[in-house]
Image (cartoon, rainbow, N blue to C red; front, top):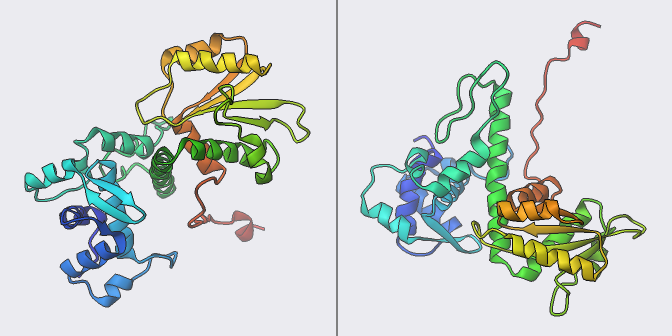
Length: 310
């Protein structure tokens, strides 16, 4: 039989995980047995040659169910069903797919973050949430839209892992990002840049703005849950900390967001304050390769007109 697509696998995956916490590799084998896949079908690889197609589709089914809040990651490569997932199974659905998951706001936000393509000047439309790519998109536009979806998923995963870590780890990630962006020299400067802890004066990091250390950037890092936005009070407190250090510029990074009053306060204060919210922070991590790595490189080639018309 043909290898099932990832949406077809969603309901079997949820039912299997409902039996108890399970490791991803075991989940792959159990679902493969349910679909009576042959050894050849189980081992058929993606073009990259790094992962089996069926295992890849199981991973995507798990990821999408997680984005909708039906599954939880308990530890590395282990998952369990959530109370919402059990409520869904109690309704005895015939099928779970992207359209079904769109009833959950978390999944809609995830889809909206990466699936929308820009409307061009001629008015061609974008990828619709939970649907196949619009036929108005050219093949390279479809690939770019898929790339945005992959990066949206990666950004969400990065933020979740950082939120699940300690505040000290988040501060370390922020400084690593700044170093990757060219501030402070190299990773050997990491310990010197981190100053968080008791008596830190309200500053979590201090990093050189230039290689000679002629100027410095003072950093505040707040590891907040999604929706718990930083308010104006925290901005004013950070401003006061900068005064104590006689600093004239600061960087405030959070894994959540900033309230409108917080952004307004930062704009009105006499010191230069740059605010980086969770979405922007995740994009910067991906752009500079912090906490992630290149999995595969695709080359899009086109006809060489000069070759045929010397």
